[in-house]
Structures are given as C-alpha cells and as structure tokens.
Amino acid sequence: MEKPQQGRIAWVTGAGSGIGEAGAQALAADGCTVVLTGRREDALAQVAAGIRAAGGTAHVQAGDVTQAARVAEIARWIVDTLGRIDVLVNNAGANIPARSWSSLTPEGVDQVIGANLSSAFYCVTAVLPAMRAQRDGVLIHTASWAGRHPAPVSGAAYSAAKHGVLVMSQLLNAEECVNGIRSCVICPAEVATPILDQRPVKATTEQRARMLQPADLGGLIRYVASLPPHVCLNEVVISPTWNRMFAAAVDAERAGESQT
Ligand SMILES: NC(=O)c1ccc[n+]([C@@H]2O[C@H](COP(=O)([O-])OP(=O)(O)OC[C@H]3O[C@@H](n4cnc5c(N)ncnc54)[C@H](OP(=O)(O)O)[C@@H]3O)[C@@H](O)[C@H]2O)c1
Image (tube, rainbow, N blue to C red; front, side, top):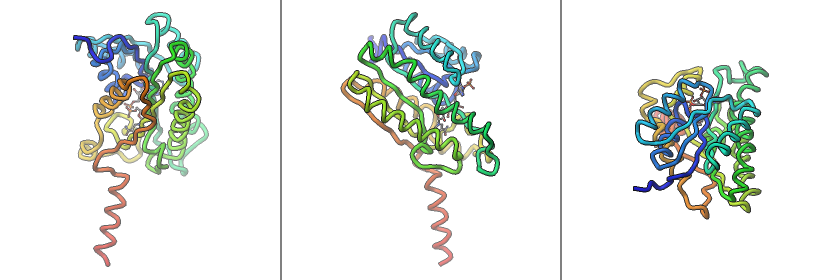
C-alpha cells in the first residue's frame, strides 16, 4: 500500500539521537527516503539500520553542520543522487555546561551560536536553490521554548541563538512563500534526550519521565512535513503538560500562600 509521503526526500540533521532520530524514523515510516546527518557516523549507521529493518530507506551523510562547505556538499549529494530535496529537518543543536554569565566564555558563545544558529542558516541556504527550482519545499527547524521565552536554565547564548532560529524561519516565510516554500519553527520545552546531560544540574529519572519524549516530536515533524502544499504551519510551541518552566512558579506561589 502507498504510504502518505512515499517518494519524498527528507534531510534530517542531528539524526543520530533524540528528536532527530525520532523525526527520521517517523518520516521513513511515512514513506520518505531519509538522509541522516550528524558528526558520529556510528550513531547514524545504527539509526539507518533500524529504519531499514522496519522497511524504510535511509542514507548516511555524516558531517559537522558548523562547517558550511560540508553542509553544501551534503545538499549537493542529495540533489545529485536522489534528484530533489522535499523536506529539511534543521534539527542539530547543542548546549554547553558553562552557560551562566558567571562561567560563559567567548569560546563558549561561539560554540553555541555556531551549533544552533549559524549551522541552521548553512543548511537553509544549501537547500533553498533546489527547493526554489522545484517550487516546493518544507523547512522544519527545532528551536526551543528558550527561543520564545528567554530561559536561564538554557543560558543566554542558547536562548539568543534559538530566538535567532525563530526569526530566521519567520523571514523564510516572508520571502520564500512566493516560491512555494514553507517554514515551520518548532519550540519544544523539555524533551527527554541526551542534550539534557549537558546541564550543570542533571534532571532526575522521574523528571525525565514527565517530559516530552522524542517520539512526541517525531510525530509532530511527520505531521508538519505531511501537510498539503497550500498549508504553512508557521510555528509550534509544545511542552509537557507538567511544564517545569511553569511548575516552579506555581510551587513558589503555593509556598507563599501557605505562609500567609
Ligand atoms: N531536549 C530538549 O529539551 C530540547 C528542547 C528544545 C530544543 N531542543 C533542540 O532539539 C534539537 C535536537 O536535540 P535533542 O534534544 O534531540 O538532543 P540530542 O540527542 O543531543 O541531539 C542533538 C543532535 O545534534 C547533533 N549535533 C550537534 N552538534 C552538531 C554539529 N556541529 N554537526 C552535526 N550534528 C550535530 C548531535 O549528533 P553528533 O554529536 O553526532 O554530531 C545529536 O545527534 C537541538 O537543536 C536542541 O537544541 C531540545
């Protein structure tokens, strides 16, 4: 039986773990041929093997998305080998433990802005020519709750980079809508993925269990990619129902009430 997105080509960055892995699996299950990018080739190979075992099609193109030349090379490989690029899941990102103002260094700033913002621009500029020629393309960017609401827990550099991703997506729609190109920025609050291990204060197993799970985001990515060409979902802000960004404030208020 024909799958809903049969024959479409999707490039997923940060596909070796977490949200990217789940997004690649969901797109492949929907019929997309997926191209997986990240720095760890072994992690990508494992994800690709899982997708193939489930009957999907996956290619590994390892690379560091902070290297614009390598990003351009991968985009060229996709067009030359697979003929088109229908979906970009611009998802690779990273944070650093030394993120508070008391510990942030210029090197740390460059690292975080490079991994979350410059890299996102590199991937977009690499796929736009093919999408313009097709007069069709879906761009999906993983920003963050911190890209909507500056979040001390994520740090200033990460929050600023993710705000930048949000603006990048808005201006993609502003300029490229006339070319049939649609951009969606996803702003998740906490998702239980390996990136949380970079936090100075680690989340407990119980806290991780209450967070969004990678498959929740995988399903969302699949949904956004599957929308018909005349529909542009501009932005999705998604959080666990038990949202620690709010829960801390509620707890503090209740503690205050119990004292009055
Ligand atoms: N988990 C959350 O709570 C949360 C909330 C909001 C937003 N996000 C965002 O969601 C996205 C995915 O993160 P995740 O939560 O799924 O965590 P993750 O499992 O750590 O995934 C991040 C992925 O990005 C890849 N990556 C990092 N730097 C890269 C680089 N320079 N070049 C190529 N690939 C790179 C990593 O693979 P390699 O190390 O192999 O390169 C990794 O597979 C990120 O943009 C993150 O900022 C996460």
